[in-house]
Length: 212
Image 1: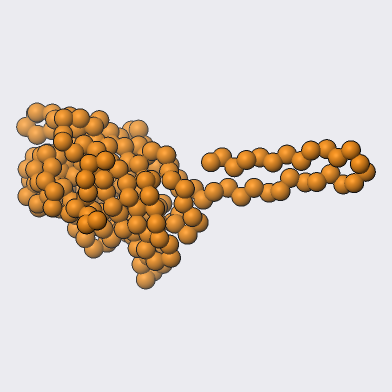
Image 2: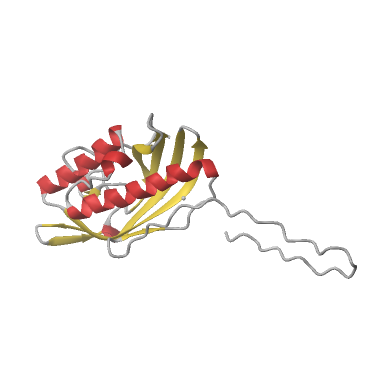
């Protein structure tokens, strides 16, 4: 795994240690192998006695709720174009990102994550929170998440995103470290969101990549 300065910055690590379970938000997640306004048609008047053509109905593109929360300290960038089949998966991911950030800033795992994440992704959240608590790191400030590319539908949707923690803060022993001073304050994340047997979507992987 890639090591970072303070943990899971934008993808879920603080920023001072590495991607190991001993580094916390100072822990980086496992690296991935390797985020419109419809036109309004107006019918023109007809000079003949024929009926005036009616404007055809315009179908709005599928959209995900913007869960930016200035009070909590999380902001989402412009959403990419997605299909109707991807809406629920991306909506689940945005809820996960909010709950993950809240878990890091409050120092306890958000109960909502039990339904928003599963397997390795849920274990990573718990590890980050536990490690930061044990090592004395606290997270604050603001993080911005931008979803870049979204592929897949039906059972699995993969999302490439960029987390920007340059306006986040990481504090230990009274010393505050600005996210802007971290080497990987802007980091690529690959998230895998899978449909569960219950029909609900859940994040099953949240893999840290290169700087973005």
